[in-house]
Length: 252
Length: 252
Image (cartoon, rainbow over all chains, first blue to last red; front, side, top):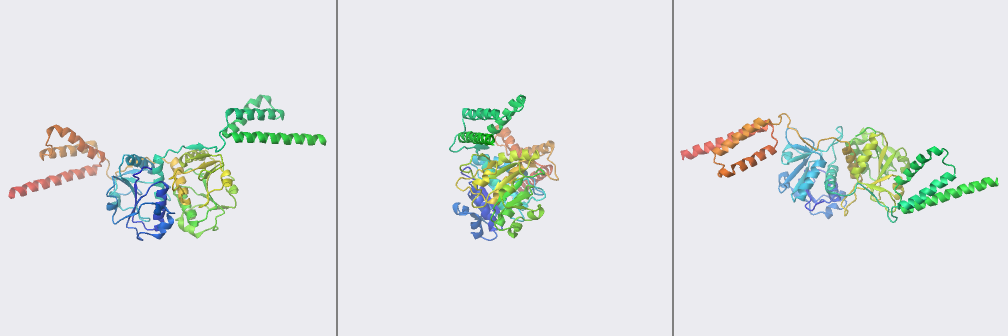
């Protein structure tokens, strides 16, 4: 996350547990500017501390305000996270599109904040009117009310994602490097020969197709060198058993 | 969300609160197949019920299993949500890329599941080995441990997003439609004339630029018809005050 990370503003939060969960979610994604407007149970709050799993101790002091207007006074772009309000004309964004715009604005050095309303009542129209944009989370319309801490997590995750460059997929093979193609071929040619020897290819015409399909199983697995060696050992063990079976059969 | 929604599997969950939060997060995004492996405090669990805000009552019965192998037995694609494990070679995906693939597989009618480990210890290597893919959430490396309910929310949100078509931005103007261009022009020409009359344009050469900039303020606001009418009223009121000022000045 960028250094001048955005502010998370909780307007009239009721339960300390939710404030703590919000703080933990923030620090999970590198944010530390938490502002509270009139927390119902005062501040500091032991339940918030417990629920934050250490996040509140690691963050700068939480700022407390009496009004939302004061809490957002220094911000240059303010999002209200809420259901779509009636009677207010404001653009409504998805969390993802808001996060992408906010990220660009933060990178440009601007001060950005996200406002969340009280647990049961959400933001009032007067509070929403202080914000320039609205974020509405697309949800199941029959059960749409998100927990406050969960809503903060969803948004901070989207913000982190906006600037994150983690590859979509990584295959780490640890101590053993991915197998060079020739090691794989040595294994596969041997497997093919042993299968031929074992009478596996009953219909000669189908052999090329069957070989390709078996090859597909092993290439899809993206084998490490160690795994190719393990497969060589597996073939040896199975051949040995077959040989033992044959020997046993001869004895009978 | 698609109808054969994926299963959320909690392996050895400890706190009922987290199970309830997970259930709420699932139903927020339309998922209802919750499976528990050896919940520490048994099942049903009053704290889970309380924390779910009604979600558990609305979902089909939660299924309880003794082993993770049983819990994922019917699934065709199983993701483990965990930090990258040591000593296991498995592809690691971001939540978003996993959600996109899972969504395509669900649409194709396949049975998909996501496994989450116990609160403190996460998934064991034996549990991870039962899963085909790994999801690791990109987070702040200095404070990376997500709350269990939060982790479930993050993933169910990403799954919902994979199939969601909510526009990135909507501007709803409610009862008043967006202003037709000609209504806007009537207002703006009048404003310009009144400003001219009031001696606003002191440097004639700069007038075109200034007019364009003022126009920018109002076009950026994407005005509704009602708002254009309100602006007409504002101009009238301000002119009236100016006229009153002039009258007062003449009386002195």
